[in-house]
Amino acid sequence: MAGKRHVILGSGTAGLNAIRTLRQLGDDGPIVLVSAEAPYSRMVLPYYLARRITEPHVTTATGRQLDEWGVERQIGRRAEGLDTKAAKLRLDNGEDVAYDDLLIATGSSALTPPIPGAEHARCFNFWTLDDAKGVNKTISPDAHVVMVGAGFISFTILNGILERAGRLTIVELAPRILPRMIDDAGAAMVTDWLIERGVTIRAGAEITGIAERGQGLRLTFAEGDSIDADLVLTLDRETEREAKALRLNPPVEMLGDYVGTGEEVEDPYGRSRRHYRDVALQLKRLVELLVARLDSGAVSTPEP
Ligand SMILES: Cc1cc2nc3c(=O)[nH]c(=O)nc-3n(C[C@H](O)[C@H](O)[C@H](O)COP(=O)(O)OP(=O)(O)OC[C@H]3O[C@@H](n4cnc5c(N)ncnc54)[C@H](O)[C@@H]3O)c2cc1C
Image (cartoon, rainbow, N blue to C red; front, side, top):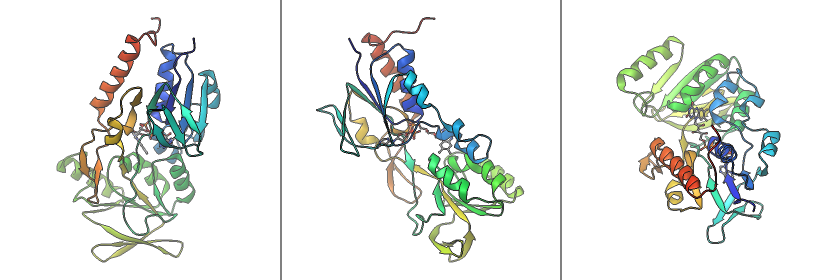
């Protein structure tokens, strides 16, 4: 008898690892992968920017690999609705995909700050492969890059930007860089390190507008002054969907950035959002999932 029909929504780290794990555990049921993007790892985008790797190395599963795993694909399609009673996922082309179980692994998305002009073609988030390609095309050795936000993502791409641009300014709303990651003493050390490398830091500063100026952009600050830039990177992320997701029950499961604590936090712009990820919760969830599958006899453990 054919196994359960698994629908995996999202082909990032969580979705892809779920597929790999199902097959490694001997589950040979049909798998349908629905994803807005082809499988790749966002985590290696900094190396792509720094030109340490090329696009094929960003890919986490080729068509051949997915064929070997027997994965039916709906790539380039977004899920727009979920009917848990009928056990169907609604796609953006109106098609329904039926599931026996569904894994939601849609990750998180970039936060574009509510600054007028932040949608300009020279302003990028650095969250998707398309963003990275856009930056790659626009950046040049004499470019002045402005990073908005001095958090984790900014520092993953810092070396790539320093290597590929002429000048870097980091603007942070909080009074110091890395406000959610390290303490004041650590931030002071990193600040010194950046200044030694010619980076300009404006902490406790708010950009209030971005406007086109010649070939580039002019950024205006709340203090009233302005700077010119060739490209602007807005580097924060958000998820707003977790609380809803956490109320879903099996056979719908969640993994990856999509799963959060549901805790209300304030984003740097004073807007309310949900906490996006909790590692302990993730691991607990993963263990529960695997134990449930083993208990149900749906999968067997691999031979030693
Ligand atoms: C530049 C950069 C550097 C990073 N470095 C690190 C690091 O060093 N260490 C670390 O732990 N983390 C790092 N991260 C974060 C890490 O990439 C994420 O935590 C990870 O990608 C989360 O995996 P995920 O599978 O939950 O979601 P994602 O990788 O975001 O995948 C989500 C998938 O769902 C798809 N999708 C979303 N909505 C829909 C929809 N409605 N319909 C269909 N498909 C949909 C997307 O297209 C995508 O395929 C980095 C991120 C970036 C951007």
